[in-house]
Structures are given as C-alpha cells and as structure tokens.
Length: 302
Image (cartoon, rainbow, N blue to C red; front, side, top):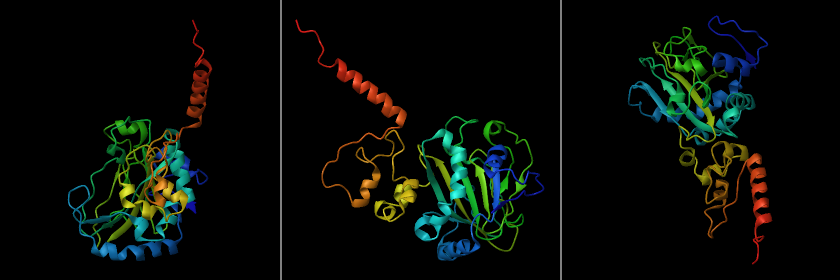
C-alpha cells in the first residue's frame, strides 16, 4: 500500500497518512484493499444496485442510488470495515475525543449519467456540537469503479477542516479525488467535499464507510441495521464497532449491562445493573465509597 499525491499536490513521500489526514483534511491510500476483495464486494452488491430506486431530493441526488446495511449484503464487507490501516487512521483523528469509536454508516452509492454535482458540505453538520477543534467522524470512500473527473469523483477542498470549517470561504480551490478500485479516499467530517457531476456515459459506483465518536448518534441506526440475532454472528470486534458494547461511562447499556447480553436472547429474569466506568472514574468512586464506609456508623452515641 502506498500513499500518493493527487492533482499535482506536493507531499513528502515518507509523510505518514495520519499526519496528512490531520494536516490536509484528507488522504488517499493507493492499494489499500486487494482488488479481489473489491471485485467480490461489487459482485455481491450488483443485484441490490440494480433493484434500488433512485433517491429523492437534491442532497441525495435524483440520479443517484444509495443503500446501506452492507455488512449483511456482502460477507466480504467486514474485511473492508475492519481494515487495520483505516481503523488506525480513525483512531488518530477521533481518539482524543472519545473512549472508543463506532461505525457511523456503510453505504453503497451509484452515480448515473446526468447526476448533478452535490452541494459542498461537511458531514459534521449532522451534529450541532462545538466546531473548530473536535473531529466527529472520518469518512472512507472505496471506489468500486474508477473515480474520474468526468464520472463524478469526490471533490475535496484541501485544508478546509478544523478551524477553517468556521470560515465561509475555503482557503484553497478543490481537487478531484480520482482513484481506482482498491484505493481509499479518506477525509475528515469537517472537510468540505461533495460528489462531482457525472458527465460520462457510465455509472460511478463506490462505498462510503465512516466512523464516528462512540458517544454520538450514528447516521445509520446500527441496532436496527444489525439487530442482536444478526450482530451476534459477527466477530466480537465487529459487533462492538456497530454498537454492541458500552461507551464508558454506561452509555448504550441494556438494563444496565452490555447490550451484547442480547446475543443469547432477551433475559427471562431481571438482571442487575453493573457499573461500566473509565479507570479514572473507578478510582474516584472507590475513594468515595471507602470514605463513606469509614464514616458510616461513627455517629456519636449520647
């Protein structure tokens, strides 16, 4: 796997992709996934692409098809979602702001001839939190067909992320993220971007996989996309990524326990709520409990 500049951008070849992602708001990993894997996923998704209706509305695109729940539509998707290199980049960007990251969505996209250019936007606008410092998500676009300027490759405004997201005018002109199947186009949720116009005679197919802070409400409702009877068949690290674990302290619990208890069915009997705290909270709580026990029962007897 190599990291390459695009559209004339000048980068040091040895510059780590995490550094580029945080400094430039995007990075492209060439050969991030085997071509055999991408072809297998494309073949699995082909019937759903054919059956899916066009979207409604100017944002999704009326000459565009979209569908989610990709982890159940192709057995090969898990390898893409759990790519160690991609997860490491997501941790780099999001780790300072959460205890664990989660899957935000896995969505297939198909731009047909005549698709208009998408309005430039930042995906972090889904959440009305503090802007300019916190990063909320990392997007990864995986081309299933070549992405070209003519067929609507993703358009990205370099260095429009972070504090620059508070500025109305992007600091630099956009680039077209041309890429081949197997490449990964990665950009932050604060980076200005949008799908290009498809002026070609063919379709442009791709997959968007994104990761967000573990304490946010994800774009795709993962518990509905992958209910317990489905998620229970996933490897443990994948089921945790789609939300079947707690984000300490105690977020996302079921009856005060890890929601993975539902993999064995809904409990027949009541269950006890169990603390799920960060180490610092556990230590603070232990001191509090110890202090309370030391003072309990020491009232002066008249």
